[in-house]
Image 1 (cartoon, helix red, strand yellow):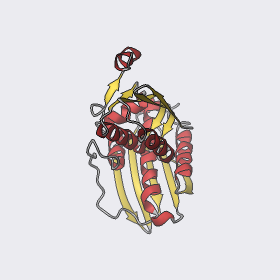
Image 2 (cartoon, rainbow over the protein chains, first blue to last red; image 1 turned 135 degrees about the horizontal axis):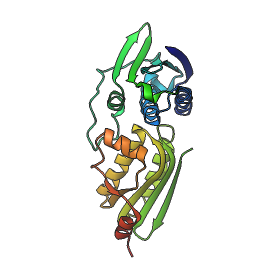
Image 3 (cartoon, each protein chain N blue to C red; image 1 turned 180 degrees about the horizontal axis):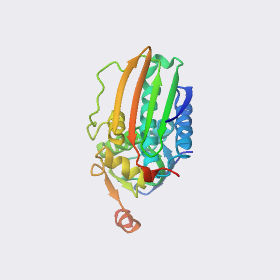
Length: 139
Length: 114
């Protein structure tokens, strides 16, 4: 597995730039634009959750994305923060149609083949696993 | 880069988006949308999404909010030619049938006042 680590401050502009950097690097290995868009959207949702909820009252804090690529097989991504973590049980259900928020984790779980939220050693981790078959990779 | 333009012609309020609608651009979008929707009530609100290259759930929230607000005020609300990226996420979150979608210029012409 090829692994890469990206970091930035947990604020909207930096987080969006970070996700674009991750996807640009993934695009050096993966040729399937649909798979890349899935990864970008899932990463965007996970990093947005960090920006919105991880650090209370606008306190500064970081966000880290760990990208693991296994050519021909899968992408494994961890989105990490050191904030307060999920304060309630994680909801993977879709929001009601008229709801203006609450679709992030549903989207991530819909786009991925595996999604896990865990807290370990002060780290809050959203781990995303996506199977990406051999034809989708650049040779 | 994101871009939102607002046009008003008779009783139609038209938003046109290009680029991205994400958490990063949501505050700017929200302010522009609220300013436009707080003016004189239009008969019809149309949001042109044909130029949107990326949208996340923050953007979807803005679409839902604008629809709700418009319809609460008695306006008709439509999405116009959502791009493939927009359609994909609307399908994922099962909102593709929640919105009234105008697919082409012919259908748009039928809705706009003469």
